[in-house]
Image (cartoon, rainbow over all chains, first blue to last red; front, side):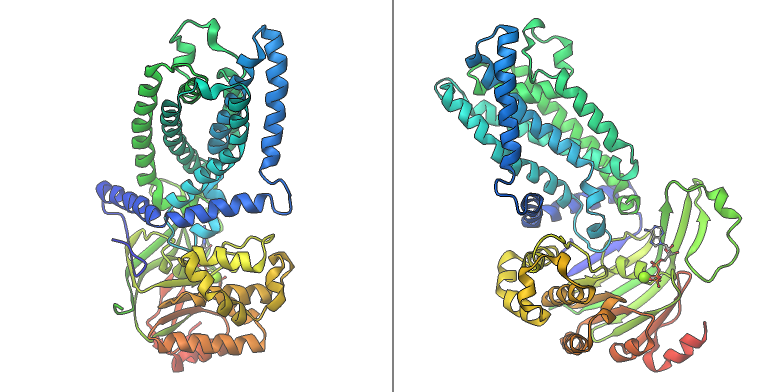
Length: 277
Length: 249
Ligand SMILES: Nc1ncnc2c1ncn2[C@@H]1O[C@H](COP(=O)(O)OP(=O)(O)OP(=O)(O)O)[C@@H](O)[C@H]1O
Ligand SMILES: [Mg+2]
């Protein structure tokens, strides 16, 4: 095993060996989780250095968008503001987490190239850095969620536990997607543009700003969209509704299959990633 | 502490180069003194063989100087020893805590203050937050940067950056110190301080591997020397035979 005191690097010794090395990388990143946290925290602090409100600027712009869209669309669609505003607020904030973690995933290894090429830091550390950074941002934007929950009295009807379950499943899924695009972007420089286009498309195809009432339950347009499941399992319980159990099942299956795929890709490309950069 | 050692067996390291047409390079493949060996892999991708079949054994107290032309593989060897590059063939085994000073800008955030950068670099080098706070005064004093530590790093000169980087890297109680070239950036005062720290490290039975084109510097710090040529290593010789190795060029 790897420790601070002993480092062993060898040439390829078959597929099984590559998987055990990939696992070692994961385990080391867990032992050094404090580093991923420090890096993520540093990213947030340094991005907003010299700014008084810091990440709350994004919160404010999101808040304005929530107000504007909440009021306007409620009028256009003929829905009450009390029903629509919290819906849109949660949609924007949680979709922000998804888009941020996936889009920034493209930069994960590219940005870390100088560290990767002269230290033996585990590669997973940088994946956690991106994920944690987006969770720190989410913690700021949570102000909006708390505001609508209090203002519209949702605390009387909401069901926190299933929402937390949905958030957890969402984060687990976002993490593998983020890692997969990180590896792909290191090798192919068109990937970040591609990912950004997909996420821009996804924000309109996912019921973030609109209600899926026009579709029958479990319509393929919704069930085939992973972001729909992520969003609905977090949002519905917070709005006092029940999310379809199928969505949780789909997220769980996606997490298992997605991580199996991503981990395999990582095991195979791990040696090369530093050379891609 | 376990015995400090570096053991490299039959190390071959190739860089795949993406996005370059191997055929267009072929006509330029006449023998050159600079660089590693260019070639095409079995899959047809361009590859640079930066190190080939390299063997190296170092024990506590060894201070190895690396010499060789530009592109002969010195930096690549140091990076491989730091654990960043995986061998294509062979094996690298390092016992002891490694501190690598290869690139001054490692983990440096130019808009953050010197103190923040000490924290960041220290975390990357494997120190805990508490260890860093405990050593902060010592690092700050050694760097000699005084009030500049409260200023953003982008206001530092190259030598000032080197001081900070060196102060942090050597604050980790490292057993194996890997250094690439740059130590000469510091001024005379700093060189003296650095010299004392390096000797201190060696007294603690550590290992130093230093790459440099400066024969004087190598004589000052090293007791052994190895020459790389197109990724192929000479034997490790005593530093007194440095001229011999240089003359072999
Ligand atoms: N990231 C890389 N991708 C492709 N080839 C590389 C890379 N880094 C180094 N090389 C190649 O590997 C060979 C060895 O390079 P290296 O940087 O180790 O040389 P060096 O001995 O440190 O040279 P110098 O004295 O100029 O610092 C060179 O031919 C170089 O072109
Ligand atoms: Mg070099």
